[in-house]
Length: 167
Image (cartoon, rainbow, N blue to C red; front, side, top):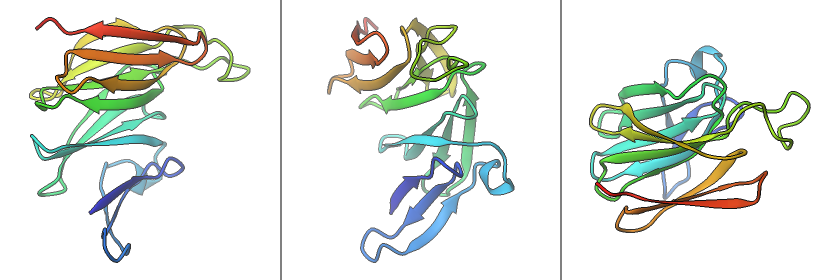
């Protein structure tokens, strides 16, 4: 199965990897009902058997069980968070999300009224475990293979932030 995030509708579509036929859609309880949703980034967690999706419009992260297709959780990250890129640690314990913060009223390519964040979710409880300052609109996000180094960029200050986990 190939999973595709449809930013415009907020749907997460499923396609057969061989035939490329659409075979389904994961229900988030929002997009199919015409609710405001904008899925941006998808990450598969092979350890827990989950699919995670960031949603800019809802300022949240969704989690589905891949075996059943059942929605596990929607975790709200904060008002006007503009959730961007997500990454899951190799051991499946942590889910990282870069959030841009609220957009500038004139144009999102200008500095907004508040900084973004790096948000860390505990995937066992699907709750927020940590929040870190993120600068002006952090978007890109990467993890080292051992999960100890987290790197993200903020595109308005042209800066890269590097964090090292100590747990």
